[in-house]
Length: 477
Image (cartoon, rainbow, N blue to C red; front, side, top):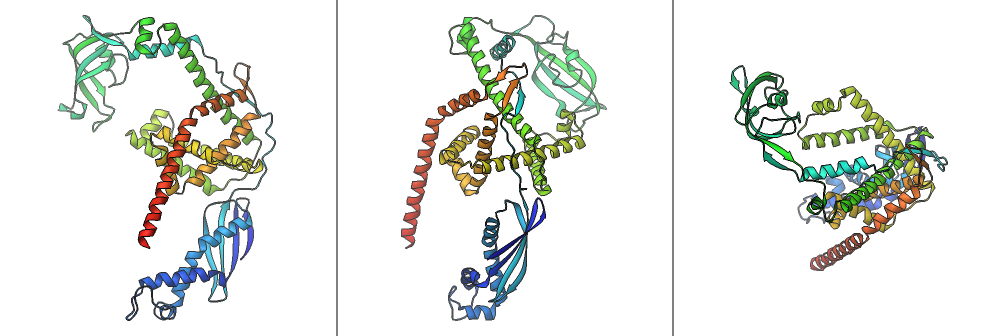
């Protein structure tokens, strides 16, 4: 097989492939066998029709087309591998020559990753947020914990902001009841501003048993945007009481005996959380700094695919929460044009960053071990709430293992960059990235037992599968 490569642009090539006809023989034999199974000729059982009769009744051209269609994926793959191009996406293939028993040739145009070298990344300077935990953050966390153990008691007074009221709501538009705006026994926090506009102002000063009617604009339902008369009736007013921050609360809300032990545990957890966030930020900043040192051409088709993927992901999330895209953009305070531009910029950065990490992995000769793949499966299975062997089977059956390998390689390449950066926080203090990576690796060790169990389960599942297949083969025999 002969392959010529023509560079159409820095991100697209045209492969011209010439194949000796005898290389198609296995595909021709396969084509005759499959067509023989489909042809029905008197005097011959399915699969036993001779090739000469297939040529006579079906046509040699149909057999050639079947053989070529079968051979093309493998031949294209060989051409890409031998040409040492990094192909992206599906190629545009055209058969340029097909002469029986003589010559077969085709061309394939495909986008490629541009050729470039990653420059020296040692000493890249980045700035990250401080990981210092303040007393205010500790107390805020404790306050949030107190909220979870708050109790509601009846108040013998009018409602004030921060109280909880049990209310009925009813609305009319032009004298007609609005069914989807009617609710009974609704528990509502006065001052939360989470219901119809104007409700909180009306509730302040109302006692149990009081009713009021006010005018507002409906923000949802069939009458969205219309002015309505809303009647609110208060059934009860309750005060939220928070427990005292003392040893008794520590024993109620945690496994600790004293409030000081709980406070120190909160501080430690916040510190771990901030270190994790700081390391994630360091990774992002390191890649951004490396991207600024490089200008590389990007194939538009790959960017468009990334934009499409992100749009589909957003639509799925919005559908899950029952939110329209217009409402999402309104909440984000963005126009459709602003969102589209941000999406395009983000897609370009993602594609460029991926190319850089892929090339760095090649330059540094990084590889992926089976243990790293298993750890990836375990971590993602835990986050998805499924068994590791179930996720492993899904990835294998859907041919997603190459994508997993690529993701793990990119992660290793990025860690390599992060190890060499010079990092300071926003207060001017030096940040020990190496210590942060060691800390993260220590967390990984906590997963070692889970990983080992997953490996054993996966191996057991594979052994069971092989035993079953062997039994099936024996039964077929």
